[in-house]
Length: 189
Image (cartoon, rainbow, N blue to C red):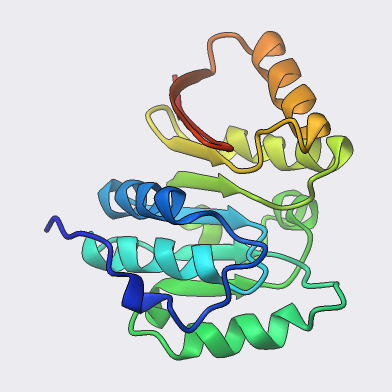
């Protein structure tokens, strides 16, 4: 079932520390077309989490696993949980309060790995070392899966450097589909 994104779904969630409105629509579009689960690294207040959750609900598929340790001064875990609880897509969302590298290493919660992860959205640690660790999740995504990376901009040179290095070291893995502002979208080859 194809459906357009409705901003009313996320109007209760602050947009600071989140993707822009044009990027939100793109994220929704991809989430509504995948078959399987989604992994989001970096959920903060859950705005993009909810967008992916609604996409999965529309597509009647999978769950988004929102991985974020929520170790910040913004009280983001409580706010994220509260914002998600006010949606009608909450059954398609599972918050995983941990570092992405720990989840990947321990394969826990196991539900993440029981179905294909056909959408990977990375908007977590914006440092060079942090994004390098998050890029290890690409191995979990099967061929044909979609990888979306946020903050691919000169404001975050470490992100650009890490992604460019990954692509040089793995030239046949990521096929760039689109660059939309600071959001870059790839399909796994």
